[in-house]
Image (cartoon, rainbow, N blue to C red; front, side, top):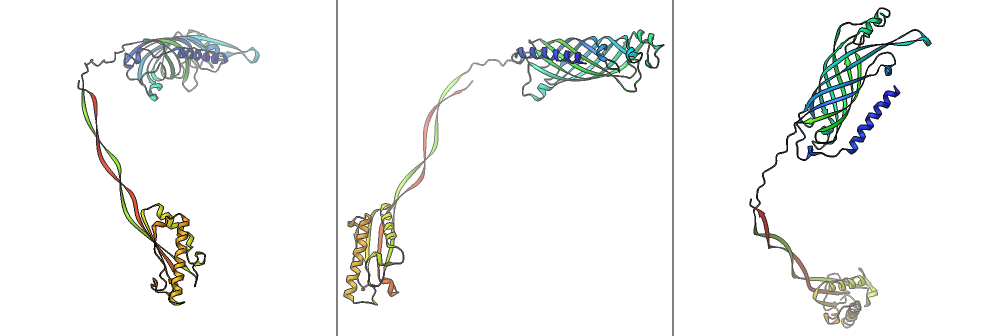
Length: 392
């Protein structure tokens, strides 16, 4: 069977070379890919499988077909194949064994369905290279079985179903074909098929169908294409109009709103320095005041300091509150606050801001200003554009 495999590989190589040279033809440009009809001529080899060296029983064979593809996927053909056939059997024992051959003629007429696997799974209706799956049923007629009848008398146990005259059999086929378009009307192809025939076809009874294998290369002429319809050319008429295009634009409107903030610094008994404060760190509060001024316009700062009424004298409490006030003002100026923005004084124990006595040892800083903000506003605007459009 090595020779058989070599022959198959050679035929596939020929088709591959043809496919490499094939280009998209007029079928896909000026003509509809389907429907079309075709006439095909093929030649190759055939063998009916038996229990001897099948390579020595290979015969030449030829086929003629006529068919059509109705859609890019589905086609059918009437296929006639025939020539000579060989059968064989061994005679003798061991090293003296030889093979006797007998010849007969046959012709097979099949109606085959053809499915294009390339267009079935591809995105286009036309490809220069196609692969067809083939299946069909028909009638095989064999005759001139004189050789087998000659051997029948001596080897009736082997040729146990030798027929005479004409032998009719069904022929069920399954196969595949590679078809390469070389031009609009011409293509070359390679087909391999297996044919199931009734038992007794090769004059041997095996209680199962006989099988015939054919390998053929051929050429097909395709015709009956229809041209693609061409739409009538209409003279184009264009006009120009001016369109108004409305669109939204986001703009920001500036506005101000008043803002105020208050900070309280508490001191230890009889102390005026910020380092002697209690509670929240005065240094952090002073920085907060500086940040407030950076983010507000037209700011003013009021610094008022007090002493608790429960301790000390009124005169001493006044001086202590003034020291506290000045310490707070100095810290603000050191932080970068403009001194012209600061007002206020120490009021001793004449005013007690808090109900709890000890909390009145404090400095209260109030800042006011205007905070600017931008409010988004959607504004309708328009532009004009000249547009060309086709009226005919």
